[in-house]
Image 1 (cartoon, one colour):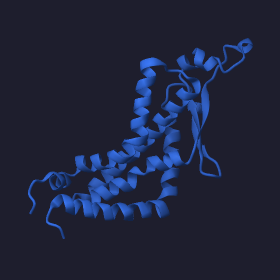
Image 2 (cartoon, rainbow, N blue to C red):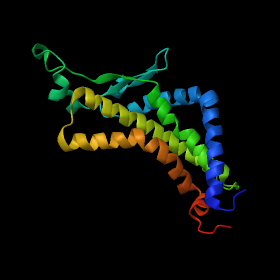
Image 3 (cartoon, rainbow, N blue to C red):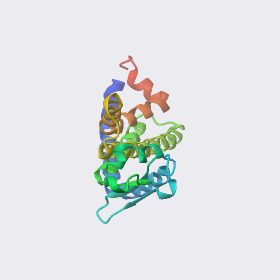
Image 4 (cartoon, one colour):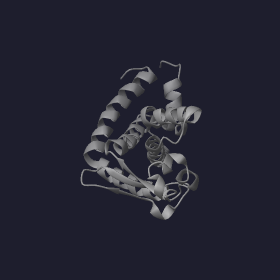
Length: 207
């Protein structure tokens, strides 16, 4: 076994990533997606607007259909009203239906095996199970929030509601949401929760 603690972590972590990704893909993916879909549907009720319209379902291919409430100021905006014939405006638009490809929630569920691999690569202690439970709850929350942010972004694209600086900021956050958070958040959460893991990775002692 290599003496360098960083190398030990890298080797253990790499092996655990392979193991956890296999378990996730073969056994846990469908249950996780089901739980995330239910939680996303519940979270949509918190979006400003008519929460009674909110729900999340899936089709036979595993793609999601989200009914996302719209706040009143968006319903009344030119961006939303322009979808309708001028003769019938203004039209009340309490929600929008959004189709979400299965690959999107699959991406956000990736935080689970990556967090588990990072957490288990640390030295095992009596706190390990508590760290796993707390970290799993955190990455679960991140997954649901990520799906909600993706939904907001896609609705904005459909309506072309934001412009200028606001649109730039939204695009930036969506870039982080899709290409940074699913990969970086698991390790950062594991580091934040486990002092032994921080000591192992950032130790300058080669012994």
